[in-house]
Image (cartoon, rainbow, N blue to C red):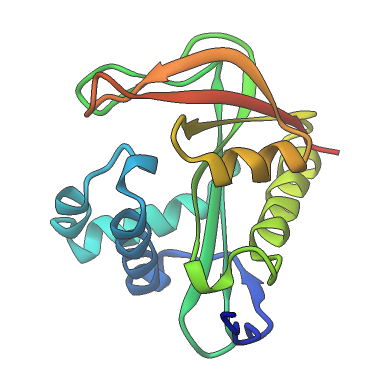
Length: 189
């Protein structure tokens, strides 16, 4: 029987522009761990400059954007979730840009937890609680939309366990035409 080490407690942190190195590290680790879950390739993320990563971190100061990471105090980041608001459901135009049209909604993106912190540690649940609080408290929205790769059964179960339901909509993967991302929605409160 396999014995698991007990993960150390984590703290939640909202990164900014000066946290660019941590943002880069967690993004590269997340894409390397499950490339199907992200519309950005590892090569594209690796090619970004310090200025690009700082710009990503600066978005967290904007009222329509939020990112929270879980980190072992003084050590590596072990999980991340981000959210943004859009006018309707975001669609990719094939060139990497988002196209939106409709009522304002909150969108959960960039979800990842280090494999050694999945399950027993509750990291994903803590991150989701923080994003839900942002959507409710800051954006005054009662729903959070997300897209999850149809083969990511563990993530789908996590979302369902936390109240998410499939909307019946799918988004074709912009890099892999034969694959889809299932749209789900969950209440923020």
